[in-house]
Amino acid sequence: MNLIFLGPPGAGKGTQAKILADRFGYRQISTGDILRANVREGTPLGLEAKPIMASGGLVPDDLMIRMIERELEKPGRLIFDGFPRTVAQAEALDALLARKHASAVAVLFAVDLNVLLERLIGRWTHVASGRTYHQKFAPPKTAGIDDVTGEPLVQRPDDKEETIRTRLAVYKDQTAPLIGYYDNPADPRLVMVDALAPIDAVTAQLVGLINEGAGAGGARV
Ligand code: AP5
Image (cartoon, rainbow, N blue to C red):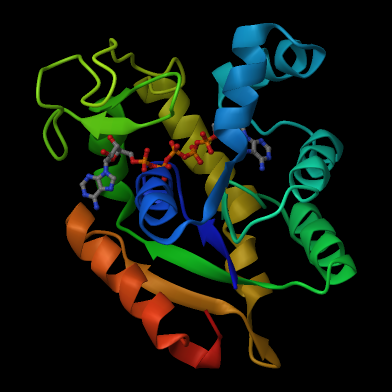
């Protein structure tokens, strides 16, 4: 079963997607990581996305849907991290998965919005892998250095307080409606984890859902 990680910026989606990819062989599709790689490489997509991402807004649906269509050509059990973010993207994903006779369960990272600012302002990232750390909650062994490669860590340009506030507003306006989209009594496809818990406790909840093969509301994982 494929998983869709749904939740606001800083909820821990990327952190958990990387842990589950390592542990269970999922392929993480992080649309944010793919966009940032395009920005670094100066591709046409990157040039278009750069100012939008810097402002905290959303890249147009048609570009994102084409990106996912290309990703779905590759094999693997998937974690969608950062997609879909609008109802139009969710409908497109349903159609693309149906074409492959596949499906996905949405995992909502339930979190108090007040903790997100602290999580994002303290985040440090290893650019090449997308691995993230936090100066307080998940510090690297040596400050400013990636544990695996020894390369320097950076802060994301959109992790500034003003941009974070815009990203949260965009989440509430455009992405939060997806909770209702997936929490449909006729076809329950939403499970929830307590994302306020420490990182390893959130992982344990996800592992529990995967091992049980079923989540709240009868959605199959
Ligand atoms: P994207 O890269 O997807 O960013 P995001 O959704 O804003 O999510 P984040 O990466 O900020 O948060 P996360 O939940 O992954 O948190 P993390 O695990 O790092 O998108 C960036 C931009 O690209 C968008 O603004 C948009 O412009 C564009 N974009 C991307 N996809 C798009 C789409 N589909 N459509 C249109 N535009 C799109 O954790 C955060 C920090 O907290 C880390 O430091 C971590 O160590 C720490 N932490 C994690 N879990 C815990 C915990 N349980 N306890 C304490 N600390 C924790």
